[in-house]
Length: 139
Image (cartoon, rainbow, N blue to C red; front, side, top):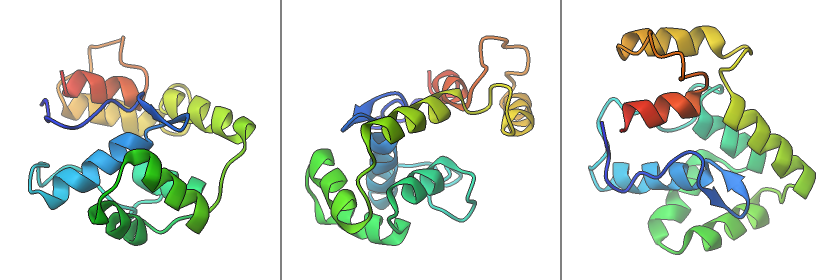
């Protein structure tokens, strides 16, 4: 299902994939515009919001409070750098590589296969990563 205002996992803020999508999810949830079953937060450490917060060393609740104060995505990323950590260029490259390939021949593959089946997309061989699944589900 297409969710207006929710950007692609691939869009980058400060060179980071996924970060902008997480901010969109926070804003949309606060506005009541995100489906109730749409995952947000860090309850499961393997989900992307949790991974992103862990990577930046920021608490999701603190990030949510900061996002809801307003400001640009770049300002919020700068806040993350100041209250968590600023990853190096190499670390960002590794992050982007990990995130864009998650589910393709790794520990996330079984869960991705299950999610594809649940979405009625098990026959879609072109969906090889979680990012691919998000695109297919939101088309």
